[in-house]
Image 1 (cartoon, rainbow, N blue to C red):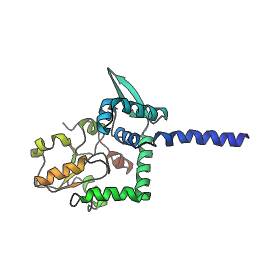
Image 2: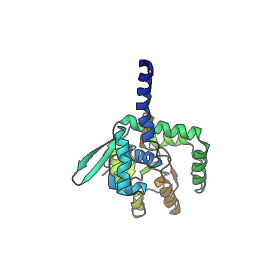
Image 3: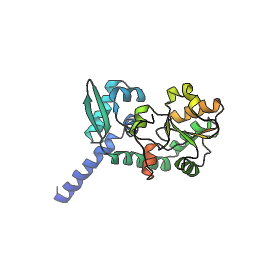
Image 4: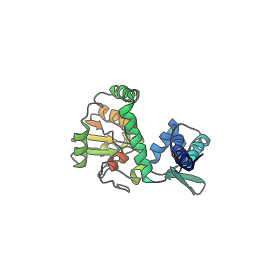
Length: 224
């Protein structure tokens, strides 16, 4: 084998490590979750409907490709994205799939059509309204994800607590709910709840990684 061929084979073998690491649907979901902020293995297992053992195995593969890192916190292991470029890579792949895979787009459209109006929102206009704070924005992700990064001015009202905290949400303004991105269902469920209680609510499909990728400011910390 000549040196040029050996060089190319070695380079592409290394590149393929990334492809192999993200070839599993569950590992893609884990990356999506970790782009929201660091999480314990047990939390990731619950979110992905996997056993802790299987979740750990998937995370080890992602770590082997240098996509995630881990650290010990007492009895727990906490994982985080190795670098912000990992989230940029994941988002680019997600957007490419959305443009090129008709089956993916059809799946999303079918799901949203079950909820009246969710698929008809003018995204760019909505983004501008959120940026200029002409609507009330609620972040329905878990508190730790909100604290790791959120849209400035958004209220942290996790989906599990939404029913008990409705009094905090004004009824005289349009409500915009967001969560982890276009394939997250937390905001979809939040809009269902809000509409059932008489609120004029819509869903922002962009998550914090999308917000950041657009060059918009991202806030951190609690809103208390």
